[in-house]
Image 1: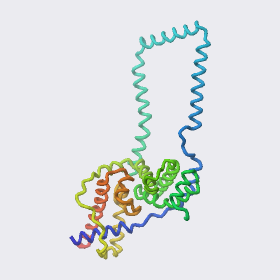
Image 2: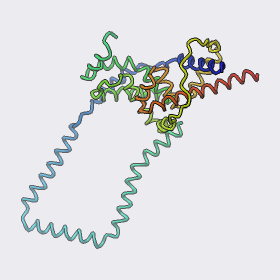
Image 3: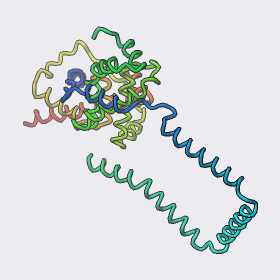
Image 4: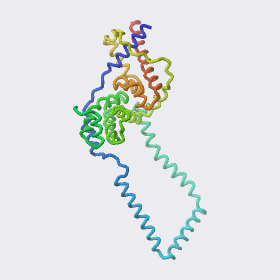
Length: 125
Length: 188
């Protein structure tokens, strides 16, 4: 038991006196450089505003165009839409495999990169 | 540094880069050391330390002072370590909290004469360095960053029992290594 207490004291001593690793270089300057480059994130960025503006303009333009079209053209468009829909319903052989393939491609794109990263980390370890 | 930390934090929250630079200066060595103990690679640890402070700057407006600034930094660096080592989080969670024995308080009156022996000292330091990443994380937070068990549990978002179990097992591992060393002395 004495031996165990002595071992505890040794281990405690070693843990407490373990030296702090010294920094290879001061990182303050590089951190501050990066901070100056990366502005703090805000809830809405200029990029978001620009995208919102483009979407709003597109919707507005579509609405104005639809209103200013002659009734005959609108009716033709509606008929073409119905025909297209019917065509989908009748000739949809390619639709299901196409959707499956697209889904598989999307899933692969989302997972392959992270799988490669995980594999890389495991080989590093 | 003449200005106190809470004032520096307030100034940094308002966007004062000089105040934040002072905070980086103050804490960088501890953050780097923690990252190094876990990832065991100088360059990677340096990257993680830098990334920690950049993220801290970005998130600083949300820092409400509910925890200490340093424990908040340790939480950020730990999360970055989790990203680098996907098994780290799992290893910590797998520790459970079934520690049967209370962690012994360090005995002030025990003469650690053997520790004077350079061989034992070097052996134990090496054994500490060889501990697994999850044990390194717990041991470093406890002994080098001097956090209490509660603070470690809060920093790592783990139950208190799991923290105690982890530190207990790390010491057990060191004790086994030490016993092997002593046996090798006897057999020689």
